[in-house]
Image (cartoon, rainbow, N blue to C red; front, top):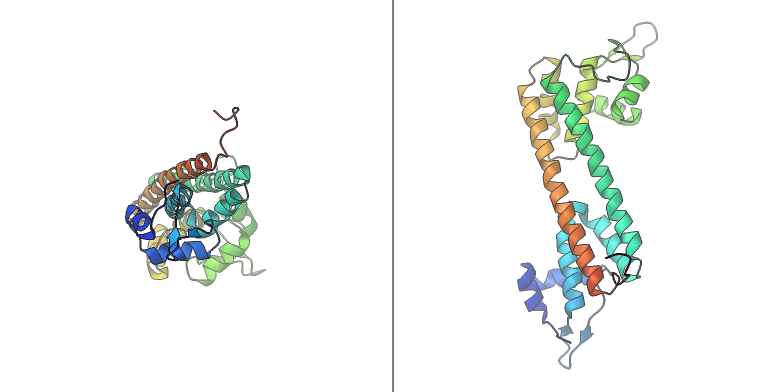
Length: 240
């Protein structure tokens, strides 16, 4: 069995040897044996683990990646694959929402919810149902100054319009991208004033970001499968 020095793996993955020790301390990589000199003796199994970690981080994040690799260490490949599948399903939902947002920004005359009757005045519950966003999130965005619905003078309830629906969908699309609150306010408020060119550009960029994350997720999933092959978890004839 071939053994690797830490520096050899670090150079292959373009990271530091301290990063390897850091990952090892998380308990997501098998503890390596030690040589007579006390140095770690990494194997092809460790290399596959480290390579999988580095590949999965950009698309799935640290928490999901570590959970998946702990499943793999326990020999539960299916639990790891279903976890990855769930994250990809979430990203698919984000893309659907982004596509819808961009379509509404490009075509302001389109109904915000074709399957529902168009209304010019809506309650927070109706808006939540149309956008698929929880009322608590809508209230939070209002508190942050991203939304400014009027209030019914008789009962004090919030009154939402189709413009607010577009704003909510845009916030939903942008919330996972890197924007400061002041930038978000400027972009979202532009929709209210029908100056939507910048909002369209930002939504298009957000969609490109989703595409990039999708590619990263597939590459991470590929390396997860490669790791499972190295561990002999893919030996089931029904898989191939």
